[in-house]
Image 1: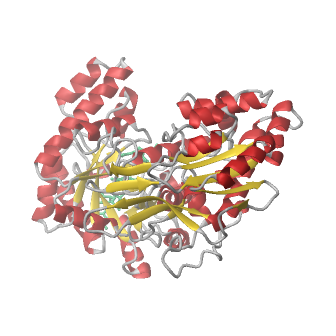
Image 2: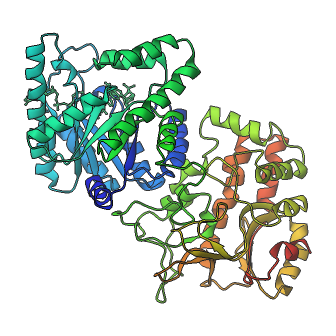
Image 3: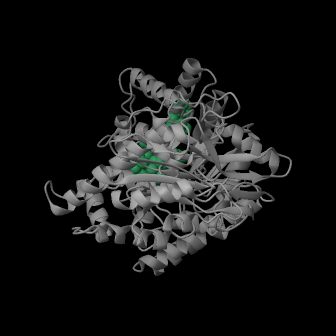
Length: 595
Ligand SMILES: Cc1cc2nc3c(=O)[nH]c(=O)nc-3n(C[C@H](O)[C@H](O)[C@H](O)COP(=O)(O)OP(=O)(O)OC[C@H]3O[C@@H](n4cnc5c(N)ncnc54)[C@H](O)[C@@H]3O)c2cc1C
Ligand SMILES: NC(=O)c1ccc[n+]([C@@H]2O[C@H](COP(=O)([O-])OP(=O)(O)OC[C@H]3O[C@@H](n4cnc5c(N)ncnc54)[C@H](O)[C@@H]3O)[C@@H](O)[C@H]2O)c1
């Protein structure tokens, strides 16, 4: 969906909004860290996130890949920066075709800075010499498909900043006249260069309006995070820093913590002034860091880190994309959303309703998701981190059990069966179950009439009432399975499925059974039923769940080592069980399992 349409809706509803800008990290490790941060920051509900295009096109492939993953895996409306530097038209066209295919339909069209070692911008052969040409090109070749944003300079573009006041004034107005051309050619939104004097920004907006530029103008806010970074950036951009700010920063320049805190205080003051003056939203230059941008927004009351909004129990897909209408997902992937989205790429949604044919669900093969099968072990640094969390060597099944226990107590934040770092939502009885030898990998608590605003289990709009059947999924040893199976068969309200790595699923659910696991009643709406246990998907999931023993965990240790043998043995012999207690009022699933 075009970002401008989302902004127009916010303007109509009188709601303030914010957005986050990121840049492509230089290493693979950095990219993975960025995605973890994105997961956390997107949960706060930015209206969009954008990713920069490295100077001179140096990060083209990484930027394209990150933009694609942001839109389709992190599920946030994404805008990609694109510049003309070193980009002949054919390269621009192929980049645009690639993002079009990936569903990234918002572009920040820029000229770009001159390549390193060159003072003046010169168009590459067969390329464009200014952002205006790029905007025109995108509109000519792609019609109205892309939402186009352009850059604005409240203090004029640095090339036009000169000492002579008369010439400066001329350059300032020439820049505004040129900005108007960019808008007339198709620019629907303006984001500005950083500034520290809010009066200058407000005057710039007024001046733009005076020449007939009517599109929204978002202030680019760069929180001061380090003294060095602040000096470098304001020097490079020729930013006018008010004397009181400069003095305050100079006085604390050797105290990094004080500089960061000052940056947050200043960001809050600047944004408050801008919002009070009628600016509709703020664009945060995050520099890929969380603390300052989130700190500012929290103090402005635009986000509440203690209550992160959750429209559904799982991350929703941006409106306007093919998956936007999706409202149901199988429970198995609840901690592996990205792998699920990858394996179901091309589905409009999980088939629901009376005529849905779930027997024919076509999941992508495991080979399509290598990135997500080695989430915690994809780089040496990650392997190191995972070994620190799960043990540098494992001697017995008790050592393995201890890792699960620590994860559910929140003492370990990494887990082979979860893409995200953090502590799982507590369900009933995991501790006792793990102590009894059940290696729990997923669970859902029994809910019977919990308010949708509940701090632990809430999701959806306020005013709703939530229900859920207790669900537990775990590996158990072949010896434990014998007696457990008899108890599960005898329990009147329990449905279950079980399988070994090599075997087919067995249990008391039929292949086309679907059990509702969570549902909510909201005023004026039909029942929403976002999580299900889908029997036909279990066969697909169990291969993934077993494979994670090997790709995420056993692979940390040397071939032939006792640790690797231990984990491979569990993979080869243990049973994966998923069980649901249909009695969400009086059922006690943990009791059935413990016997
Ligand atoms: C929000 C934002 C994001 C940015 N992101 C990136 C990024 O991801 N990657 C990156 O490399 N750089 C980025 N930049 C920097 C940007 O590429 C540079 O500032 C560059 O020097 C100018 O780009 P532009 O799109 O503003 O250029 P343009 O709009 O083309 O303008 C450049 C200058 O030339 C003048 N000019 C150009 N053509 C004409 C004309 N026909 N008539 C009159 N005047 C003209 C303009 O007035 C202006 O002074 C970003 C800048 C901003 C503000
Ligand atoms: N608003 C901007 O003007 C802006 C934004 C992004 C990038 N850029 C320029 O693009 C080029 C490539 O940037 P990169 O992402 O590869 O790495 P980088 O290391 O130069 O910049 C890292 C990040 O800092 C921020 N940033 C950099 N220059 C900025 C500026 N002048 N104003 C506001 N924010 C700025 C952006 O978020 C950028 O992604 C550089 O020349 C950079 O200065 C400018």
